Image (cartoon, rainbow, N blue to C red):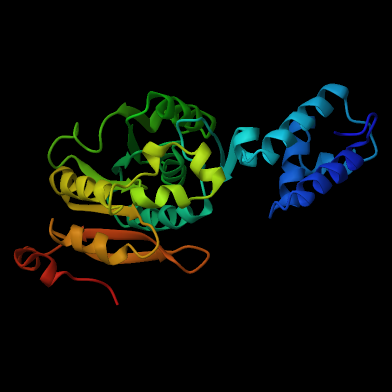
Length: 303
């Protein structure tokens, strides 16, 4: 428990000690985030007011938050938000917690949009918190994005995030399964971070992910590739001739996803690595007609 009449600095030290004692790997960062959230102070405020006493209500919020963190709830779930790319995003129980790995897909998709039509129409499949749609709309002011998801709660969360990022007028939420509602040849870009974890691996995920991220957004089926087959198959129909498909992948899935794409007439033209050097995002364009005839055996990839 936080000491009665503790100053902000003392509360921070006590929170850090509790989390370190529990062996949490990011105890210092978690402590700063929870103390800041409980007191309503940003990093500067924590420093400037470190000698001021913590309000009793804030102290109670902090103790409750620490109990939740020690019980395994991720710190960003507790505070209800997480920074991603250039914005902060509200979370909900229907959405994945945004992770830095996905920034690789934003970089790759942004380059594709910069080289495409002046006013592109994007589909963000399985939008969740809306991190892909919102980030890309903020980077490309002429773009329009239809964000699909099966969860009404996720769409509501994404819409709130789009509003706070100032892109709501170009963000169109749509409850849909993959790309089913779109007309043939109607889209310039399809982007998605689909579920890609094999069902058998879900039980081995960390407690924070396993108990707090929605299974619908994690479970990729027996081989982790079910969503890719659906998205790529539908993308072949809904993308315009010069349209592009951009996908986040799990570790080691590049070859499998590229083969799926090749059978539907797409060639791999670029890949992007995350900060750990792992290939995390793939960019596909239409293959030449003669390349598509022989399917995956004539798949073109980059070196």
